[in-house]
Image (cartoon, rainbow, N blue to C red; front, side, top):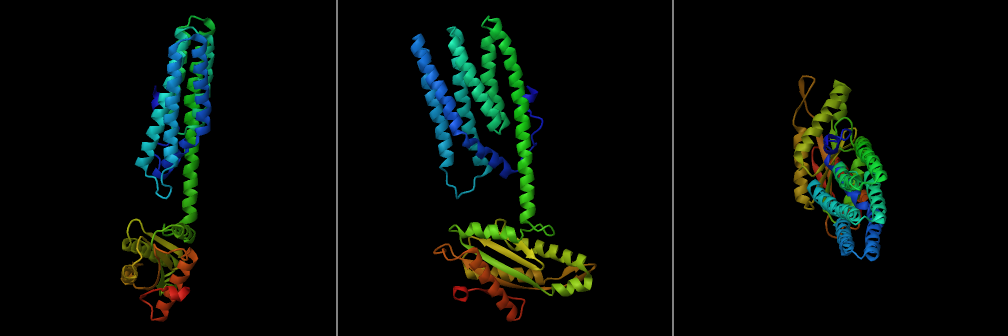
Length: 377
């Protein structure tokens, strides 16, 4: 029971995005579900014809009903709006639907096993054993949620074990012992496979983070910014892009050293995070270049105000090597509107902001400038 309820090799708590990905993979098993369901439904119907027992028709109907419920759950998940990101609470809600329809289907197989034992139908035992092996083998190999796999396998195999033990047949009783060993191996194998898969996703997540983030400041890097802009360019979301260059950073670097320059960049990154909202993006593009992505805003005046705040917070004195140091900032702003945004690719948006940035520098630095479509069309 300890192994069933508390797997030993899985992570204690998964990051939300990894747990969502694992849950989403549950809904890729429809072909396997249909194959096992066909075996249950057809097999129960054949047994009903052979024995004349009405209970097997009821089991056939129950197999159809639970299969339809499972299909409805999977189809509903796949038809949800792909543009809207799945939350952890929503993912767990879908997972519960998947689990409980799977448990209901497993209970039908368990009922078939008990009925075959009650009417002493040898063919029913063979059918139940085959369905149970197919269900549990597929479960521990594909169901990457331990609680679902363990409960499902315990119901199916546990019912077979009880039926074989009370059958009075020494061969069936010996087989029940092997089934218990098989059940234990499912616990172990499922625990190990899921643990390995979770570890793989964690490593992949760390590598993705390292590839898309600046190691010095922890901000999104140029690659990560390109990804954000590319995703936004394919949708209808309004977007503001602010490109910021520090004015006077090279002098600080030359006078106080690279370590002080790195410290300055970290402090700039922290201040810029305070300028934007939690859902907005702050990126470091390299050297003293930064970018801010403001989501859902196409008002040039509002974006200009954000840019002016960024200039203001950067111009405030920084404490470096025990003394106050000042630098400046220039910002170029470009806007991707929500409507008629087909021409606004990530490249166009970046080029527009870059031209506005150089316009701000030519105008005397320490200021922001908003790009207009005519400037880059």
